[in-house]
Length: 384
Image (spheres, rainbow, N blue to C red):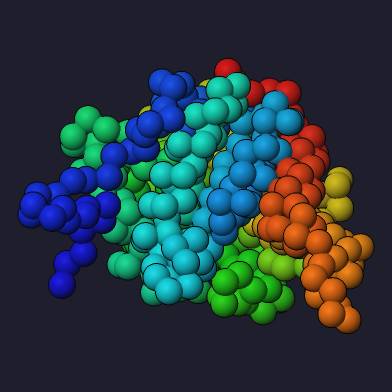
């Protein structure tokens, strides 16, 4: 049975389509980026040599924390849901990633309208091949229909994670999704190479396959163009690993990003590769808008080096998860005799009320978002 995204049946038999987020709280602002605004954000980062934190969220609490952090940092940013995060967002009984994605986006549109001084892009993260038909392709089809009806797309970008398939197949699928993304007025993110560690049950070994090559950069540019067929971001791998690791385990080689950018830029200048979108006009010597995955535990100088080579988006999940959970644990340990009913006592309702520890957790996660904005250079540079 074909699934229709964002469509609900009414009792009278009529139906209504989910809009791109216009709700009772909409103030006509631009807190959630339009396609044009998102393009401006990415170009500003490429020109200015900084990157946006892309914060993974799994609930309205973590979404509120991300918004709070971006506002406190006076930074635009990206908020995203992974395949597991989207399903979790819909609730344990529903456990549906499309429903969760649309609920996440609807909540974000409504609440983000109260943050008029920043711009936020919504993104779906790490969609592997087995989830394409039941997740990202459905969302893109929905967004194509929104655009046809004069609406803005629900999301601003989607990631296709082809790291587990051969490069040719990866780019075959990327070409198809790029065409659909252009029709949906969204940006595509691709991954070339494998990121080690584990992300939502998808894992890769920590070995030499974690390093992309300049030759792969040439192939990507030849197959997908450099913007003329649709805007995309590329996550070339340079030793990245998902998860939490002690210093020294992750062997990053950010200079690979420079080699990839330089190789493609020289091919353009030599006339060996067309550049009808004039990608080098935005950032001379850096034809690709790059993405940094698996950065937890990376040295500050490694992050700064990667950003200097054209990274405009850095995924942050493990560190914000820890900041949120650490605050909850601290509250529980500090108030254990109030949040638990011990020796016949009744505890303290004010301290086991989820709002008491929830506020602490949101503020702690927001502080980690502020730290990321400062580290990546986006703090104080909101376009509004």
